[in-house]
Image 1 (cartoon, rainbow, N blue to C red):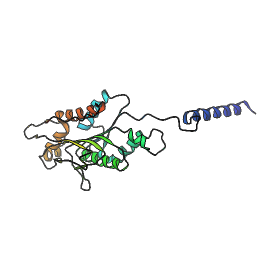
Image 2 (image 1 turned 90 degrees about the vertical axis):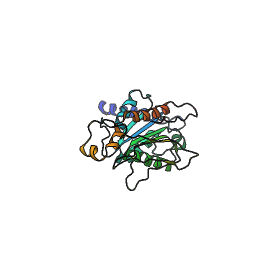
Image 3 (image 1 turned 180 degrees about the vertical axis):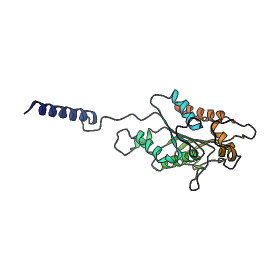
Image 4 (image 1 turned 120 degrees about the vertical axis):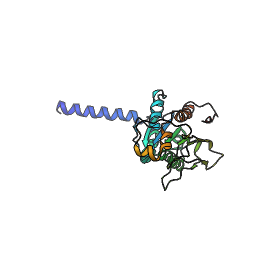
Length: 253
């Protein structure tokens, strides 16, 4: 047999052996399991805002958290119309054995935090509801000036969510939902519905459009208000390293 052919056979045999060693234990069980992130943090932008736009609250929050995020945690911002991609990302991260099916142990390992603004806040509730249908728990949802599209319902928090907070402002043509409720109050704690009034305390926003400044000034201000987003950040960080049995409340603005 030619030397070149022999080398190729030996190389192929080595490759097969190496893959088998990684995938299968001595008893035939799968041995290689990717670790589940300690926390999965998903944010959603509002309107038609891009997921990487640097002037918007959800993106800025993710950038701040990412700077000192635990090495085994995960954070990503999605555009609200890409909720399905966010859903698939969560399933992929929880699927430790990569078999395409989440078992009870993989679901139980889920520590998920969701936040968003405007249409993105409504996407938070819809994603939580989709995770509820397949038995995946959510630690926290945070809605900032939540605006639902015509076919969406963003006011009832599903029972798989441990805690939920709602920040809103009441002014302008577009303004957020004032009140959220738990589908099951014995399973979900509503931390609060926190009102911000930008007619009394205006906030300067950068890179806003003429349409935004004219027709939805306060709604835009809720997206760039540093005080509001610092409250959201505090909630998220409290759940990155929570104390046993501790559920924090947000101070009134």
